[in-house]
Structure formats: structure tokens, C-alpha cells
Image (cartoon, rainbow, N blue to C red; front, side, top):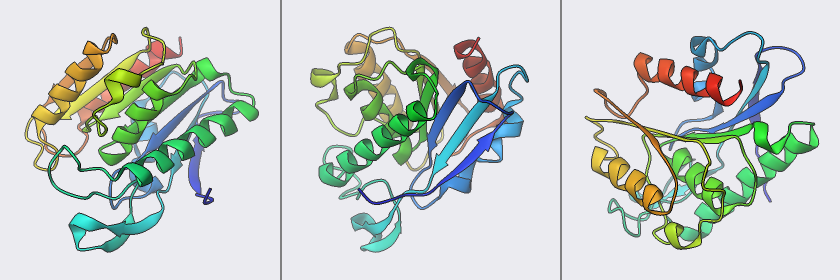
Length: 219
């Protein structure tokens, strides 16, 4: 598998947990690194944030222009939007990142996987399709990309899941997020769902809510 670099930020020495956070289409691992200090997490919970860079590859809906992308986007419709092969390749890559953190001494149940937009779609699929006993899933302004996820989800049903979406999102409509959350709920999971008056971004209120959720996860 292609070697992909990551930005890493430790909130203190000897982290007890890791948060692997995937960016959205056209961005890179630097996109969310400034949020780490804004989360203002408890100082007695040392964590490692891992922000990987997606590979540069052609994106069909952008006239084949090469950009950082976790998978090719074939159309603007939700059904058939994600290219399955490149999507699953990124899911495998995320599993490799989880394995890497485990080898570095982080316990499975201290690893959160997170993602925004395209990265969130990969995070959702990986979390629900893998047998890892991870600490939680954080899916921001995103959607369920592959429709068969409810039929094949194997992750434990008490997995903590935080999902959030902007009510004025012009890129991924709020209904995509709502329907995706409902699909996950129908698969037997509980979803901590949040809506914010914003577009395709992250708000200060959302950062506060993420901080509370992460603090609870790592208590």
C-alpha cells in the first residue's frame, strides 16, 4: 500500500490515546491541526492526534483534476457517488494507521477514528466494518458512502458515535447527514447527533461539543 504521511500532535508526553482524523476533499492533514488547542482538552489526558494526508489522485467530478482525495467521486448523486475500489483502499489504509497506533502502545479501546466530509465517510465505513474495539467514531459533515453498510456492520453496538452537520451545508446536504445517521441507528447503533447553523465547515460550538464528547470518552 502507498506510504502516506501524517501530521502528528501530542498534547503531552506519553499519550494514552490516539485520535486519527481524516480531512476532506482537496485539503490535507494540516486542515484540522489548529483545532487541537481549541479543543482545550483536560491536561491530565495526554493524547496523540494523527492527521494523515490523502493521496493525490484524479477526481472524476472535478474534470479528472488530480487533488488530495480519499476516493474518486464519480457523480454528484449520493448513490454511486463513491468509487468503491479507491474508497475501500482508503479504509484499508485507515486500518493500517490503527494497527500502527496499537504497535506504538496505544490500546484499541483508546483509539478514536474521525473524519470530515470525504474523510468522515471513510471513518464511518472503517469503524462499522472492522472488528477493532475502538473508543469511538466522530463523523463530521459527512454521509454513509456505501449503501450495504447496514447489512455488513460488525463493530460492537455500544460504539460511541458523534455525528454533526451544518444545516446550510451546500456541499453535502443536511438530509444526507440525517439519513446517514438514521441508517446507522437502524443498524443497531446509537448516534449522538448534532446540527449547527453553518455550511460545510466546523463551528466554535461544534468544537466545544467535540471537546465534551472526547473528554467523556477518555475519562
